Length: 222
Image: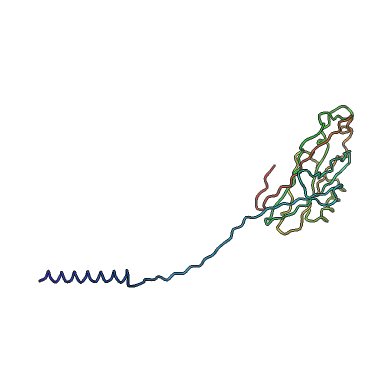
């Protein structure tokens, strides 16, 4: 008798479990509330775009500088006290603030092995030239600085070789062009030691580089 009761209880429980499975599996839909906010960010690469133009006594309007540009007039004849000034206009054409510097290097000389002075000694022209630069944030400011520099005779005393100087200014996006004056001269105290004799005229070939790097990065040393 007891066994029949347990059997009925077991059947009843089985029926309940079957009914529950049927309700969950086929007869009802369960839902959970949910919410989400979506954000889409666009990442862009900054563009560092340096533009450089030049002018001098021969090229009187600013012209884009190329690997073949004669930034300094090649036919100039140097003598004690002679000075030549070339001008650069630097532009920030990108969307990144940058620092910049100018480097001038001796790329080669012509006939330096044969060129001799009045005493028959070899002449290496870079030894007798001096170089310097002036930086400004406007052309008017540059002209004033160049005039003061030439009047005061406070010029760079380094012999022409590998020379570089960083601008004191950070070139920010949207700023007007910056300007640089490159000054090369032969000191007045140079005498016949650089006065050549014969058919071989001493000449020097210069390389000019304007290097820019984003403002928050330290400039590399030469």
